[in-house]
Length: 299
Image 1: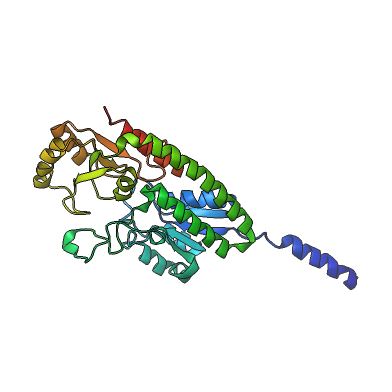
Image 2: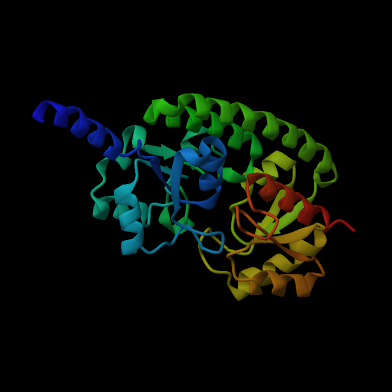
């Protein structure tokens, strides 16, 4: 009886052994959650810290976020100090040291060349990032580079599913390359056009499209618009024939609408990240929507 019971117990133990747990990913912004889904599909579980209707510079370290960080195997964030006001606190309170550095910490902006890197940082200049403008998600060329390095990181952390990650990266690259060719042709009428922005978060978009930013509603990055500064923008916006005044979905529309009413230059809300409008359901939709809305301003 005892000899017979041994294989039975072993079989029961094997049946009770759970399947390999999925890789848990904590994404700081929706664009990186979307990219993880493209590259990993159902091989990972993804928690997202923010939405398109939030200013990602300012996020409350809620207990629910701390719990998600504590459970994660990989953090995929923008980096370049974009999340400096809240991510270090989340990491500290979660006690999850593997996300602080090493393979468990993936900072997208640090995978590519950054624009607007200051030679010196002075807080009197506003919200200036020492490592350059962090908003790299608005350039599809940089997204493609980031996808390659993120795919390699997934393979490193979860080699059992390496074949899946590699195949999905190849498929994403094929579809993304085709989309970039389509976007380039579609965006041709925007080259050389001038814009005014709410916050200087669009540098990568203008660099890709060959557009020119001639002013910002914020007198300094992160500093709310003032009446005096807004008044000075009226002449520049009108005289330089700006195409549009750009704001993100999460930003207060009143300053842009005020400038539009004084200049006759239309204001437009761009999604800025995945989920920023109904069309921007994923990274492909993000750029489809952005181009459609900018092109609609050409009369």
